[in-house]
Image 1: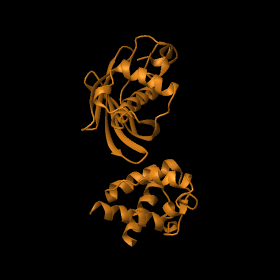
Image 2 (image 1 turned 90 degrees about the vertical axis):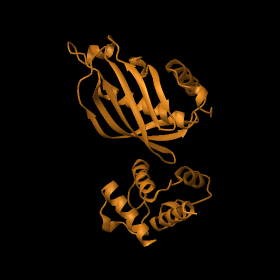
Image 3 (image 1 turned 90 degrees about the horizontal axis):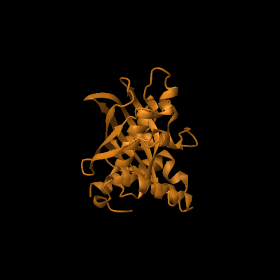
Image 4 (image 1 turned 180 degrees about the vertical axis):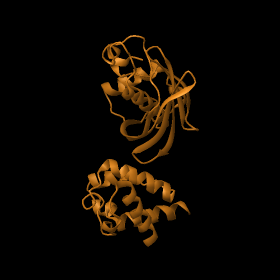
Length: 93
Length: 157
């Protein structure tokens, strides 16, 4: 997970011009880092490209809106990275 | 173009859903109240409308890819370059290519040519959402018919 986090953190730092040292695995993308939904599209694009996956943002958003998941499950960076790792593993099967 | 109605595409010349490309014709009208203000004595197609033309061409490509099930809305622009003036009466070819299809968003690269020269280009991000029903969809269906959107080659959403 650590290399996934490094890649994601660097993407966020570069895409949103956020100091790299403020981004931690416990950071919540929206509440802590001040990333809005439009910025997150840029991040999602970069993540999709870097890992060769397609983050299921629509599904995640629907689950949060329906109360079936919390924003923390998907948007706290350590959890986001775990989801990315799962998607990468699924792709290689 | 029906420039005052923000309908800037005249005809879809080519839609290739495998190559993720579209090419459309957009003819700048010879007269419009837009040109009376922009500018008196020096009518020019506004740059923002050239950008909108690129967005609309990209949008029809995205609509095609989703089988008319999803509607793209302009979200962000990058690397916009307005390279030369466009004047009333010019015939434009607007091209776009999808560079990335994300979940709920898409990115395209688009450009406009006039007289064989690139007049502008842009990288465009769209939010892609479920197609609104009712009057919105009915009007989009009508525009699709008018510009020759190939419904028969696209699965209806």
